[in-house]
Image 1 (cartoon, rainbow, N blue to C red):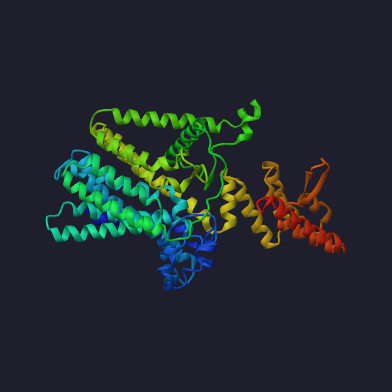
Image 2: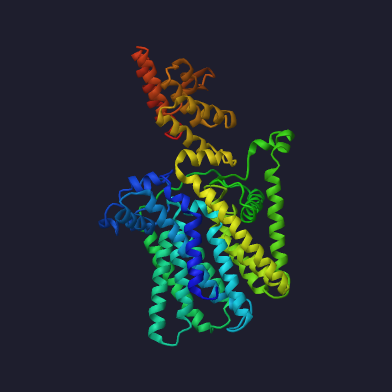
Amino acid sequence: MAKPWVAWLLCLAAGLLVYAPALSGDLIWDDGYLVRENPFFRSPVFGAEVFRHYLFFDSFSTYYRPLQNWSYMLDYWVWRGDPSGYHLTNILLHSLSGIFLFELLRRILSGLTNSNDSGRPCRTVHGAALLVALVWTVHPIHNAAVAYISGRADSLASFLALPAWLLAHRAVRVGSLGRRLSLGVLAAVLMLLALCAKEIALLWLALFAVHLLAFDRELSWRVKGVAFATALAVLGTYAALHALPVARAPMENGPPLPFDGRFLLMLRALGDYAGLIVWPGRLHMERALSDPAIYCSVAAWCGQPRYEYLSILGLLAGLGTVWLCRRRGPGRRLRCFGALWFAVAFLPISNLFPLNAEVAEHWIYLASIGALLLLAGAALALPRRLQIAAASCACAALVALGARTAVRAGDWVNAETFCLRTIADGGATPRILSTLASLYGERGDFAKQETILRKMLARFPEYAPARINLGICLSKQGRAAEAETFLRVEKADADTTARRYPRTWPAALHLARLRHGAQHDDEALAVLAEARALSRDVGAGEI
């Protein structure tokens, strides 16, 4: 077990084993666009063109990830569109990242635990690095970043950023100027590619800087200055590349919450992520930390205590981290480094800054390493016998987490299974329910589609797309009169008299089709004319 290649095989085998059920998975959600409809991945001719566009060619999103498109080009060339090959690439990227993480920790933990090159301390560092890397590789919280083809940006960025850090670590320690220069250039190129894989690589760069500045005591300030200058050059190059796409107006998410509201969401996010790292029982991609409806009455608030428990759990997790960092003894520097790692990676996703969601499992991909390092540092502070007991518990947890990951990986076999299991785990969000209803509609199973849409309306009565889709579903079943009640909405005119108008263009088209089917062509044309007029008056966002 002391040989590095044994650890490499363990990380690779663990990743392949626990995510094997995902190999038979089909395309889900964004996969249909990124690996089927994407205009760039079918030919290497577009290899340079991807740097001039965002990931989604026609969308409001501003994700700049040209290297993700490069990875899909390679997959298409090797696998010819077979989803199993794409899933295998995801699993290999994550497993190899686990190997690189082990190698990085094996090199930097000795400086964080006062270990030397011989005897028991070296074996302790090796064992701690291996356990952290293995637990991170098999942890089920990373399913959305590994089993989901479109989620590979996190693992792709780690696959490039980790060896970049390793090369930089080696470059500043070799004596030969030529070798130092070549290793430094290669590290800079890999880090630039990592940034082009996903914006999270900025945090990898920040973590490298934190370690170099505050924890690496072997290097002189001159060497550190050269490393910082190289990092700034990488950032400047990335900024120039990021400016190539045509600028897009960001989506309007409404005014930001006041600071106290954002701070409360931060505590809840911290509690949710901490709970998932320790006990990943209920996993689903779309999670929520707030529901305005629970504050409408005392009964509603008492019926939804989960959010308040998350706030308390987040507060306890923060206080516990501070206590562990302040506690003296072996492993203190490692605990502080793990806490800083988690803080750097958690801050951008903490809800203190505007986000397009409140929490998401794959966002914790990088921060979870810091949490595991914090726990490893806490274990090193224990007496020798208790350290052995803690290592035994970690091995048992490794098996349990791997089994949970394998079960969760099976959720991605197809879109219906994914949606049903997500709903069963408490993830019945409008997007998940809409996806499931659309699947039934495409299949022609309108009875199941109607059931799902009515459940959506019961739970989310103000969710307009559910009403529209229910009206369309009813119209396809020949229930025209009932369908019209969902496709139209009442609104007061300037003279306070109520009138009914189509909710959206799809609703207007189906209303017109219903009127045409009833041989009322004049009414059908009037519906379309009214929809066209409203689109000019109130804007496309409301029609």
